[in-house]
Amino acid sequence: MIMKKEIIYTAKAPEAIGPYSQGVKYNGFVYTSGQIPFDVEKGALVTTGIKDEVHQVMKNVKSILEAAGTTTDNIVKTTIFLKDLNDFNDVNEVYASYFTDTNFPARECVEVARLPRDVNVEISVIAIA
Image 1 (cartoon, rainbow, N blue to C red):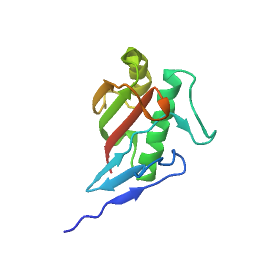
Image 2: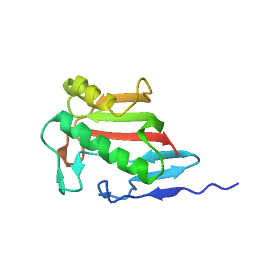
Image 3: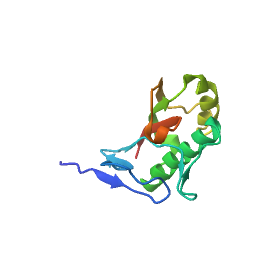
Image 4: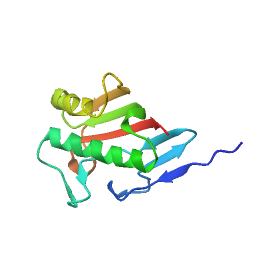
């Protein structure tokens, strides 16, 4: 049986700024592109601190997952890119609030030199469709 990928798009998350999709559904999984703290309703980046930025990123991820017919409860793997690893504890505090009990996905969190649009955080996920 030949599986076909499905491109996921929602107006509730930032438009792709390059040759990529917000998300792709394939073989029972959803893969999101890295999300940055861009608020589509305001048409601007959230720059009011790392906690607010992570909330916006997770809202964007959640919107893409919902467009694919799934939820944050079905995330199995997360990758977090941080401009400053000193923000790790604040990121964890906000990130944890998007999961129930101990239903946490596997994850890595790395510090990077620079992110798109010079944001402080970018997150991508893999979820069960």
